[in-house]
Image 1 (spheres, rainbow, N blue to C red):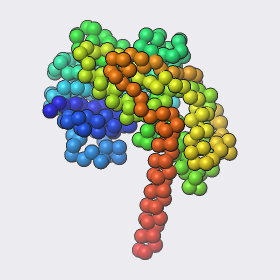
Image 2: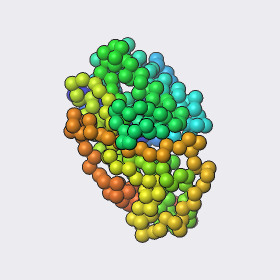
Image 3: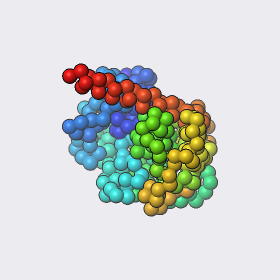
Image 4: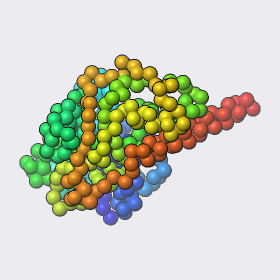
Length: 334
């Protein structure tokens, strides 16, 4: 039985990756930070099939102990301060976790067992002010946020340890990938959740920033499949995962409201507070290498992704409303 350690297991990608590896017969360990409360709603359904271990990317000693205890064959580093707008207000913390945390984890692996295969979650945000269109593995980087800069450090330190120490260490440069498990603070989920609440009569407007930014959006479960395939290759390389299509934020918003039979112009307000200090205008990926070498292909279209997320959020809001009514009824009885 193969063993895998996933950092960031409570996040969107971590939860889908844990599911995938468990289905493939892995013994899966998920790293969680020590806290009085742990957000486990995305992984609760995995029950005892997922083994949770406490550690922190800020603490190399704890990482070394976890590697010794779990003895993983593969380590997937998905943990990060990954909310881009927050990286401007917490730039140092973002660097400590998203950049230096990668080095601490690589050091721990190298000290305990340098034969462990390592995956680093890189991002299209490293391209930032894109120098070529579309972007592939050879496109120059030009990050436009502290998050993008921190991810670029993590990417290059992974390359450096691969070349310096012969470690099986690779990076997946993933373009935007979404799902119903995306955090509500992220743009795509912010939109679909707001649509569901508007339909339910719980809010009457949605405030957003730049509607003209363009992104390459895919479906998260497709992308974690690509992560796994990278670590099954004979030699470590870096790969772009993307759909090869670009759509504007305005288009995402328009189609999300349209799924519910609404016109976004009646509800959306452009608010300067949500405009980034340095915007990333256009990202579109060329995943030709991954398609050829990994046999990887996205399976969910842009329109299908939006429908999946809007319908999931409509069901969630209905469930929340039912729970609140049930609680109110119980209080009335008492």
